[in-house]
Amino acid sequence: MMPHRADDATANAPANDALPERPDTDRKPGVGAKKHFSCAFVYGPGAGVVMNTDSLTEKRVALVLLARPDVVKLENQVGFIWEARDGSTHTHFFDFRATMVDGIRVAIMVKYDAKLKQEEFRAEIAEIATQVTPEFADRVTLMTEKHLDPIDVFNATLFNSVRHPDDEADAIMRQTIRRLNGAAKVGDLIAHTGLKGRGFRSIARLIGSRELALQERVRVDYDSLVMRGVA
Image 1 (tube, rainbow, N blue to C red):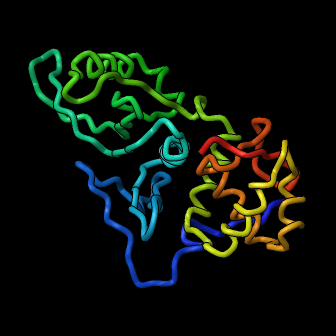
Image 2 (image 1 turned 180 degrees about the horizontal axis):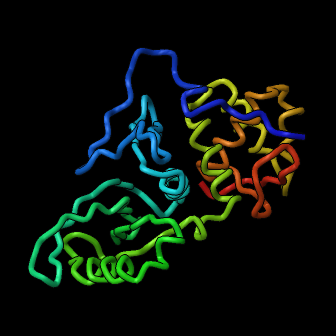
């Protein structure tokens, strides 16, 4: 059975006039550009925050990072000044800088895997990475579409789309899972509560917040087995 899915990140938004916070970046990606994929999406609690990305891979990386429990802050388009071998200075905009729960900051470049075949490009990003100091980031990493697991992308996208609480449905579902001993099918929990699509969205939220946990590493759907989490 296919899960109910929200149409977009605002599908279950609170009924108020609050607007999402504008992005705070050193560079504004070309949202609306005709020659490549670009987008703006909203994440976070309440009205949320807008994030702009220059590629579909960037968007997917952002959603996956935002869904990770060890990432406490995610910045995008963070400028870093570096010096080329000819002495000229340039600004490289790291696609993301993630702050981890232990305080470590990771500067992240996101590129298509095919780009790595270009020797000049590889030399440039290596030169940039060697110049990054602890004041900017503790380490530098490169991510491509090949680093993304489809399961992570699917679930992270789902979690973001249902991020707005449904107080009534969430309270009913929390009461139900308190009595959960072992694992249960998502579909069975929904049937037990009678919440239908609201129940599926509630369960997805509770998985995203670690109040529920998937028994296996799978896409969240009606046949997924869940158990009480550690949150």
